[in-house]
Image 1 (cartoon, helix red, strand yellow):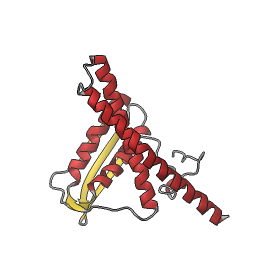
Image 2 (tube, rainbow, N blue to C red):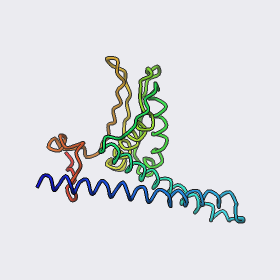
Image 3 (cartoon, rainbow, N blue to C red):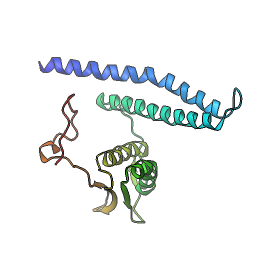
Length: 194
């Protein structure tokens, strides 16, 4: 039974990887075509059309990011993920992601507070992967924080390490589910709050 489950899991991962590869090309074409239309290639467009094309451009970019994230997940599971570690500071990355998600937070009435003291040291990191992690953490924090709540992002240097903490006033994760936080969630089973 265990071997069958492993086989099914591998088939699922292979399917996601194949679909992600197949989706990336048409999505990129849609994004590039939209950009050309916005630049006036093919004739003039109205302001309303320009706004609609901007929405299409943003959403196609978001879909491309999701496809890339799926491909990255497949690479991680296969042990084939390549990382590019270079010395960098965490503060600019935090500021960037907070700026990206702030409109969503404002739409929900969620207050965002960032505490990144000046002078945090350079640490070796793959900045693109760290940006992915930060987007995921902050996105989930906003998603599960009720309207009018708060999301706090705190960076600190301690014992020769830089730590980033995300706290929110959302439902949280029950103690029973903490050990499963990095495990795949079977369909139909979501963690309960606590």
